[in-house]
Image (cartoon, rainbow, N blue to C red):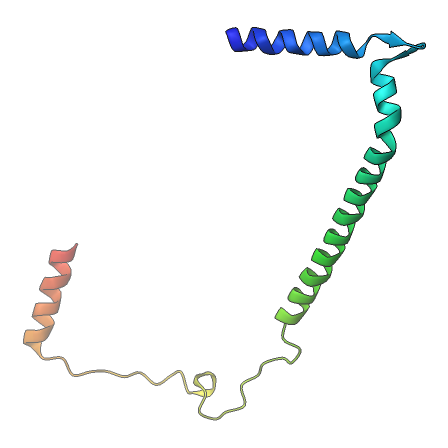
Length: 111
């Protein structure tokens, strides 16, 4: 609570100090007239920096995504490809009755 009151006191005293008039202008206006050219230049430099950064980021992002899309459509040309195999062929393994019973028991115990 003490810190809050100190902050509030410093804030009020600063506002009152900057509101004092000298030569029909407040102290704030005198300070502003001296500092404003520098702050305008700093603001313009900052805006230009962020504009250049955004443009570079957009350029690299576009380049990155353009390079991620293949230029050539991929197609299967090999006769050994799985896509060209006959899918109607079914492989049946010979399972002995004892093995089948063990597998059935495993499945029943699992559920």
